[in-house]
Image: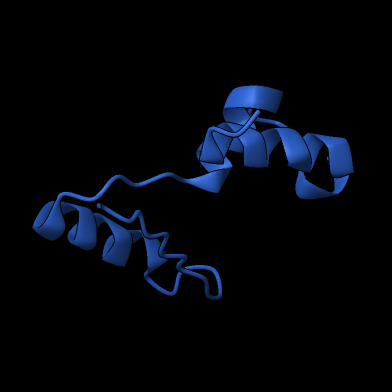
Length: 68
């Protein structure tokens, strides 16, 4: 049985999270999901985190995890 794993990278802006994530994808072939990319896809490029209510964050989570 294959178990899926989720790795979450967090840190301050410009600390290298994206660079590290891209290296991990390159080396191990993992799938990378970027929260900001999903957020902008759903709400548009001009949305800010403060403008998103709980139902919006739930929608983003559902899109990222594939849950209904």
